[in-house]
Amino acid sequence: MSRLVIVSNRVPVPTERGPRAGGLAVAMADALEPGSLWFGWSGKRTARAATVPAVLAEADGISYATIDLSDYEYRLFYSGFSNGVLWPLLHFRLGLVHYRSEEYQCYRAINRRFAEALAPLLGPDDVIWVHDYHLIPLGEELRARGVTNRIGFFLHTPFVPPEVFRALPRAEQILASLCAYDVVGFHTEEFRRGFLRCVHDILGLAPDADHGVTMGGRRAQAIVDPIGIDAEGFAAAAERAWRGNEVRRMRASMAGRALAIGVDRLDYSKGLVQRLDGFGRLLAQHPEHRQRVSFLQVAARSREDVNEYQELRIALDRIVGDTIGQYSEFDWVPVRYMTRPLRRGTLAGFYRVARMGVVTPLRDGMNLVAKEYVAAQDSRDPGVLILSRFAGAAEELTEALIVNPFDPDEIADAMHTALTMRLEERQARHRALREKVWASTARRFSEQFLAALAGRDG
Image (tube, rainbow, N blue to C red; front, top):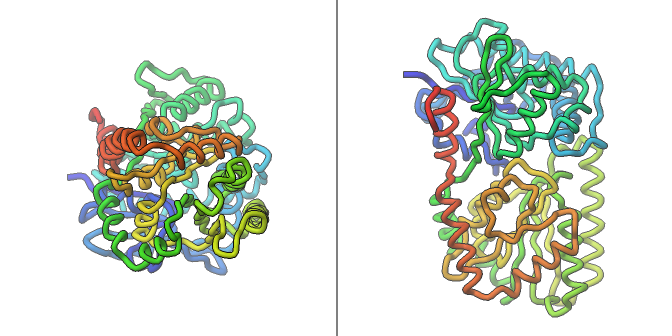
C-alpha cells in the first residue's frame, strides 16, 4: 500500500504549542494516516546554512521530517522571492513585486535542498503531495534526482491570467516547474483557466481536452478541487464554546448589541482597510446602528519584517483609532481590534455570537473563515455572511451577500442589509450555505486530489 508524503513550507509538528494560523494543518488531518510522512521547514532559523539530512520525529504514528533555514535563506527564500514576488503577483498586486535575482537563486537553491533531504526518505510506492507557492520547483528537483513517484502540487493562492503572469521575471521557468507534476490543483475554475492560458500563451503548449499539459514527455493534469473544513467538528466546537467562559464574557460585554466579526492574518490581500472604512461608512450613513453594533476585527500579525506589512499595520491602527474617536460613547466602542491570534475554539464561539461575518479579501484562494462562519451558526437564528466576490469561496457560497471589496459603500450597504434582514431570509440563506459547506469538506478535498493523483476519477 502506498504511503502519503505531504510537503509544505512549514511543518506543524504537534509538539509545538500555541494557536496555529492557516488551514492546512486542519485540512490535512483527514488525509494523514498512521505511517504518513510530513516534510518541510521546521520554522527554526539558524546563523548558518543547515546540513542536508532532515530531523525526524513521530507523533500518533505520523512521521515528521524537518530542516532548518539560515537567517540569510529565510530572508531571501521566504521573505524575498516567495512573499516579495510570488505572493503579490498571485494576488494581482504588481506594484508590490520586488524582484532580485539573488532571491530567485536562493528560492531555487532551497527547493533543491528540500529535494536532496526528501529523496532519501522516499519509498518506491510513496505518493507525494506538495503544497503552495514556496515549493513550485520541488517536483522538478525531485525528478532531477531520479524520483519517479506520482507527485502532485496544490496551489492555495489565486492564479493570475497571462497578462499579469508575464510580469514575473523567470515566468517561463516557474511555469515549466509546474508542468513537472502529475497533478496541479486549484481552488476554482478561474484559477485553473488562468494557469492553462499561461501555459498556452507563455510556454506555447496547447492544453488537451481534459485540461492536461504535456511537456518533456510528462503530462500534468490541472484539476479544480475547492478546499473545505471539518464542518461537523467546527459546528460542535462552536456549540461547546457557546457554553464556555470566553463566549459568556463576550456576550455580556455586548449588552444585547449585535456583533460583526472579521478574522484574518494581517495581510494586504485581506482588504482590512477597506472593510473598516465600510464599517465607518455604515455608522455615518445609518446612524440608527450606532451603539447597536460593534465590529471585532482579529488580525494576527504576520511577516512583520516586510515593509508593506508594517505600513498596513500603521494604516489599520489609524483607521481603527479614527473610527473609535469619531463614534464612541462612554459606554460603547464601535471597533474592537486584536492583533494576536485566538484559539480556534474561541473563534468558533465568537462566530456563533456574531450577527454578521465579514470576509472581504481583495483576492483570496479560498478563505476558510467564510465556511467556518457558516458552520458555527445556530440554524434557528443564524447570522449573515458578507463575502468578497474575489474570494475563491464566492464561487460556492452564492447565498452570502456578495460584495466588491474595493467599494466601502457597497460593504456598508451589505452590513446594513445584514443587520436589518428578516429572520426568514437569514434562515433560508443559511440553509443553502450550510448544505454546501457540509458537502465540500476537508475530507472530500483530500480524497478528490489523491484520487486524481492516483489516476482515478475523483
